[in-house]
Image (cartoon, rainbow, N blue to C red; front, side):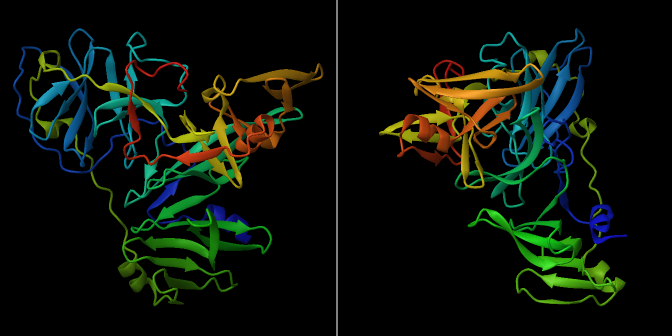
Length: 423
């Protein structure tokens, strides 16, 4: 078996992030943290049905999806004072995966603020009781970074091609950087240490060897750490157990803190330094001891709709908020719809020929037209993103700058829910 085949088939017994599944949209119970018992005040004769959504250790709130006897759905939550509250009708369900940055929320389409044309998913922030459209990330152990998988489409001579990428968000600066991109999904595994260092592995097609890489935040890229195949990780002690590329397939222990390595002392030492982590049972709705809580009778809390600014485009002293932006290599990509009116832009597409479904996109500014190359345009979630370089070219505005907004405090209060033109 070749090193390449071995690298893909070897079972990695680590606390890893496997990006083979779209982890931002699957409703999963979110925490193994202890859940406080309920102090119920609203009781009725016929018991409602409850499903635990998630427990937030930061705020101490427990969220539950409820359905009453008539089929009406509610989101209810227990605050850290053990009192229960509900969202208004039309707020149907909420869910959040383990370590996810924000919760997903389902709303009725007739609610003010619901707008399916906006980019991203409907998200709920339990720390400030706000709802906005955007993207979620799986957070690193110290919450310094977030990571997510994303699809996009690029224009080709025969139509469009789907690409898979991995985005890394720096939670301090707000920068969203594409750290991996490929036509095939799930080729890489990513592993966090407890001090927020990110490791990955790959088969190097040039050297024909398996290698372990460490993310360099300053360079915005992965750099080779050691040759070999990662087997296990002790995230607390920053120790790696790996197999070298020799014919003997020797097992080594590498210390990330010192940069030193030594041969493994055997199975006994490996189990001592790299113990298997047992799965922790998630709490159930029975742990809440809700009893005959009447969801409809609970006091009501209304979430606030807000707009999100991930970055700002700065030009000639003015700032233009962007719902998203991406750094990919040396290029910055921004959603063209967010600045179309302000910069007097128009984007058009046309079929190249009757024999091909491929489209050609053109960008117009005043009387200037640029034919966009595949390197200058991407399509994320049916939204067109263009490179900052092509915007500079067509507007002849060389002083265009992109300024990122950290996720903490990124919400802006708006008078009307998610006003037109923001996205």
